[in-house]
Image (cartoon, rainbow, N blue to C red; front, side, top):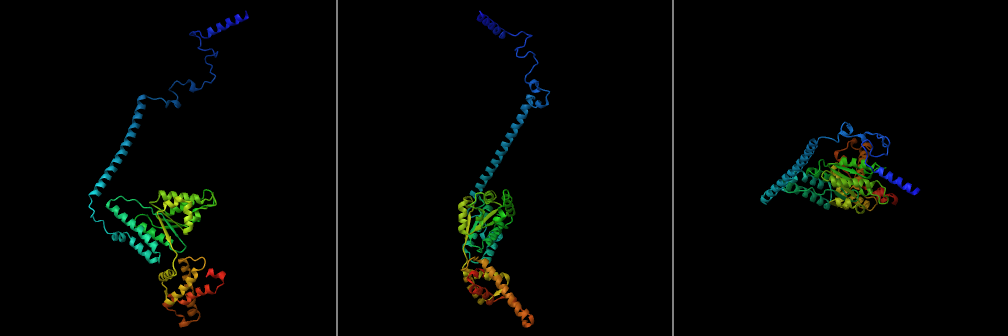
Length: 411
């Protein structure tokens, strides 16, 4: 009986739940009050469009929206037409140039190489290189080859041929005092004469100039040196000290990455030259293959012979306006042969140091002769002021021959 009553009540409740609602009755009976809202009475729930400044921008006339879209479409089409027209102009110029080159007779005069060499001042720089540097025939030959490429490239450009700036980054390998910095200076001047460098100056840098001591210090230092060298040549001496294979946290790697980026992206305004001992530079390139691949000119500077070092002494004496007789050169030759067998020999730098000591010995000798001993009433001649004698070099030779073994390296 009870089960029948329960079943009857359930049927009545179901029928009333699904019965159509009367006009005055709410569609659901979840809330007794029709205005009751469990989510609050926020404007976003009551908004029906218009009158709300925050939402009005989402509404507008359809004609205005279509007009704005049409304007944007026309701008895009105009930009595409402009690019297409620019490309068409380049194609027409290219075809006209090809036609001009095809129709040009092979016998068309392009000017003489000598004219360009002298007109641009390149020959003058090569003459200075021969004048200032003794020996180094292979180095001078390589520099002349680079100069020849630049001259012929400029002649081709004058006639309208296609040209491209060659890779001018360089590697100078050799012992100290073999003329690497001098050649770098001459190359900078040649590049400036040919229009491949705005200024042609040379900025010498070492690890201390490029690498910082703490995090965030390396990049500003490296970029500052690059900024100074822009328009010329950045010569990084002993470049292998930039990379420390034993320390992964060494800041030199950051400097190398900046240099590589500049060598790739600014090759038209900066020539980077790295210099150092050949064996160490080869090892450095093995660690940094990207540096090796970006350098197109590798120049090796051999050590000077004793005869060439005597000629360097003659060039120095000429530039300083000193007179050295044959006997003095013979003594200097003996000295330099002995000095070459000792440690820390530095080619032309050793010659320069020897010349400075010889000048000092000459000054001491002249001072004692006229100032202390009072010869000729203390009056010395121009020849006395310009003379470097055999005795002045003999002092250097005696220092080597008579000094203790442990002290000979200082002679």
